[in-house]
Amino acid sequence: MLARALFVLLIVLNLGVAAWWLWHEPGSGAAMAGAGGDVPRLELPSERATAVAADAGAEPAPPAAPLPADAVCVGLGPFADATTAVAAQTRLAPQVLQSRIIERSVGTVRGWRVLVPPLPGATEAEAMAERIAAAGFTDYFVMRRGAETNAVALGRYQSESAARRRADALVAAGFPARAEPLGATLQPWLEVALPAGGDATALQTVAGVAQSQPLACETLQ
Image (tube, rainbow, N blue to C red; front, side, top):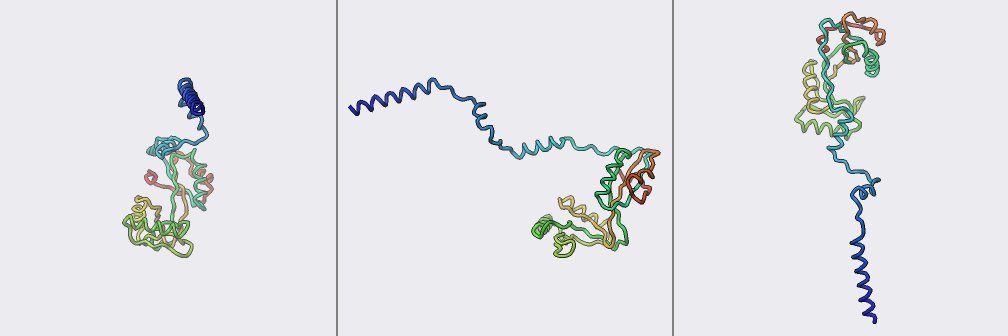
């Protein structure tokens, strides 16, 4: 009797499974995706780069237009710091054709040096020095003390042109190097190009600086 009862039970179970397969409705792909809606989608690096480029604007900024032949160019300065110079540049933007911030040396220049400015810590400075060496540059030194601790010194030069060539080569290789005068300080100046008849004295007042000096407009192009 027991064997017969088990045989009947198996038949009933098989019939139930068969009926389920015949009459159930499979979930659609959209419903299955909706079930996991709270799970963030994996994003490929290439997709992220495309999104960032779209947010920033895919088209690069066009180069500055040539200045008209009758433009007037002046230098305004000195500014206390770069932040002050940038603020003045913003205020003057509606009144000028072009502008740029530069640094001028003040005092007696005894030579020039090239360096990567101080990094957050010794580990970062050592890593920077190793990268510079791996790129084929020699004559470097990690500074261990003083106001420029963790800077990477990259040589001293008698002439500005030699120092700037060295700095430009390092920048082209991807390093944040800069050339600086020795024995002098650097002060920010704002160089601007005005339409013909522009009032340089009024610009000096708006910029809030002590000096306004005429410039050759070729230096801004």
